[in-house]
Image (cartoon, rainbow, N blue to C red):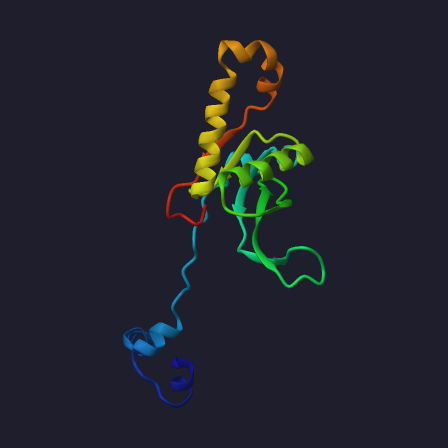
Length: 175
């Protein structure tokens, strides 16, 4: 703006006058606004340290799917879900089909996951009721198995199957 005025007229303190006019103009101010940049937090140490796949993983359910029960030509459709186990380091995904949202069906999917991919040290999940029920069932099972009567028989199995369960804070989908 100032350069085009200087070609025709000589205005004393013209640059300061142009700058003052541009800064007081709402349209010009909005056009020159700098976009905000979001600061990212540091990644958790579990995601940064190299580890074998699925040593630390997250679990969640995918939306319900309708599948045909009884074969290709069957007209009966049943609702089922997909349990997603996501590795926190490599971002690999293991998918297990789950028939319903009960704790027993999730524990069966977790057992299949452990049989296929090996035991996980840390499992992260949201606060769904089936996950809370699975955590409570595993804790009760661990307490029962650590009792004196069962400890002699399956001491080796119990020490190798210790899994720590972590819940993300409620109402925080960004976790």
